[in-house]
Length: 435
Image (tube, rainbow, N blue to C red; front, side):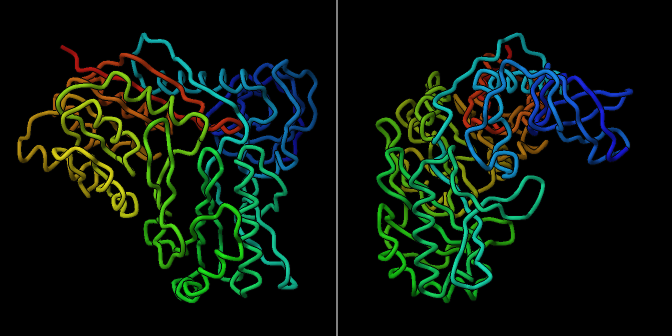
């Protein structure tokens, strides 16, 4: 029952950041513990089939346990694994990925390979919630608290590039001086790998407030100074994406990965780990070659620009307006083209027109994964090779079950630790059509 104190042994990590234990046949999920640890916990929530607990004391700690680097760890909802060393985090994520595949019934004999890098100061983009002081003359930036909408004021964020918090603070101060801070819910900042430029996006409460802030942006940009190259104000649209209302300075961040330069505007998706982008991208595209490739869920062309070097033509498909606006100018080869559509719309049209199958397909869907219809259409296309990139092992495993049951086999499986200190990670699965 809620409030009970129990002694349990932690058994295994589960997706979401918790560890699983059992007591009297009941599953209990506990955060900030490590498999193998003996702990005294208290029950804080009870459901019909499971309970959630909180750590009180450790009776036996794991050799993987370390001191968290951030003073806000445990309160802030951003990080889940700072109490565990890097090797332990990677091992836990491998266990989670393997179990997700097993539970979905995905048959694979290939090992889970891993790709990782420096686990701190890696984030190239952060979004701070903004809270105005009760006196109207002060503010703090923060993240949402764990399991809450409450804002935790943060004085540091060791997983983010240091310039991001500094730049967001400078912009907030300029907004405060201009009587504009009360109109802002969040401040997003993105930087380049070398922290030599920062693009800032302000998320306004309403369209009216965003419109009011528009004329202020040049002055705010000048006052904030530093490495900030551009600033925009946006509102959320009906599908929770940002719609830009006004901007000042540069419209996009020029982000260089290896020998490739990307243009990343405010509101567009781009991968978030500045240390791993090049090896991650190169792994996804390393074996790809042929006449034609499709890049589905292409974003601003992170993979498509490299695929163009390997294929005579690339078809890059993207539905989000901010990303597509850049994507259509990113492709260099005349036979290549950008398509403004959802992936399922593109695949349905392709089937109706009975166009030839591509030599390679790259898929990088959002967290929700592929629709069942998308999997069916992909199975019907008969492409010889596919690369599936995923940020959610549960939805990926579901999709792989549908793809491998009918048409494809798994050739390799890579876990990319793109988000150290959190439970999130990317997976890259190479698939080939069965003969």
